Amino acid sequence: MPGERRPGTDHEHHEWSPISTRSKLSWPNDAKVALCVMVTLEHTEWQPPDDKFNSAQSGGVGVRPFPDYPRYSHRDYGHRVGIFRVLDVLERLNIRPTVVMDTQTVQGYPYLVQHCLGRGCEIIGHGESASQSISGDMSMEQESQFIKKAIDALTEATGSPPRGWFGTEYGESERTPDLLDQAGISYVCDWANDEQPYHMKGGLYALPAMLELDDLFTMSTRRVTIDRYARLLTDGFDVMYRDGATNGRLLTINIHPWLCGQPFRIGYLEEALAHMMGHEGVWAASGSEIIDWYRDNAPA
Image 1 (cartoon, rainbow, N blue to C red):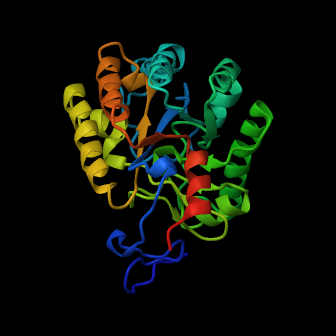
Image 2 (image 1 turned 180 degrees about the horizontal axis):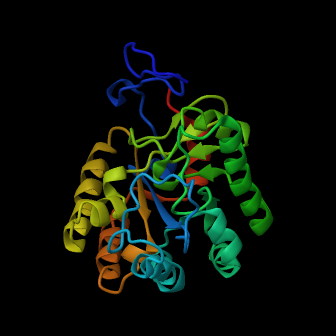
Image 3 (image 1 turned 180 degrees about the vertical axis):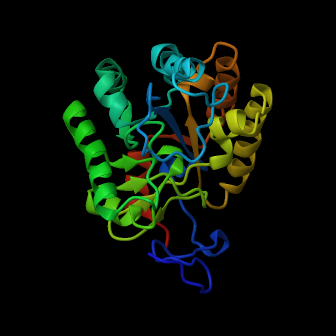
């Protein structure tokens, strides 16, 4: 879908809609903010394929020639230790997580799949691995197979197809929303352009993630300290909570267990989320719960 120069957006995946012109969005029990916490479990390959695409390779101590032990083992910490610490925090605060899993995690770590299901998490699709992302360099057939493989792996492992999708490094091509819709996905989290869900084309909805509050983007890419990151979370929430009094807001936060699951960071994360959950009028829900409500109660 080539870009088209015209008023508003230059594509046809969704309409442009300034929030100031919308009718009031009301969440369950008239909550001011819907809080969605995504926990991303993505496998970092020992040796990525030569033809893989990755825009950043962010995190850890930097990219080295194979084998890059520090980066590999740093990321692996999230699967071995960090995930349990993060899920414990969310359980204490009564926040149902939306767990993002790539194909290599689903197939290589069946224990984690069952552990997350046992704790009531929603699991959504995330492509192949941390080092392989959708891009416009793919053909339509390659991208279709890429998406199908991820959906099929989750369906086999969990017993039901995933309803949501979050691309590796928010990666998409100009075709991705259409292909996700055709594959039966209900919502996508890659579009970071709003503080409310919105309808895209067909049966697809956007659940916008707050990119600047993604812990990888903030602490790994921008080198923000954990105490400052926690302050960003609470400051951002406070503004959205105030604005949500007149029109409901959505705060979607993406957490990586290899970062926020570290023992010196987890307390800051818990304090920030506890600050949010300590307010009346906060609805903590999974991605599917939020999208289902929005679809059935979308403002005019």
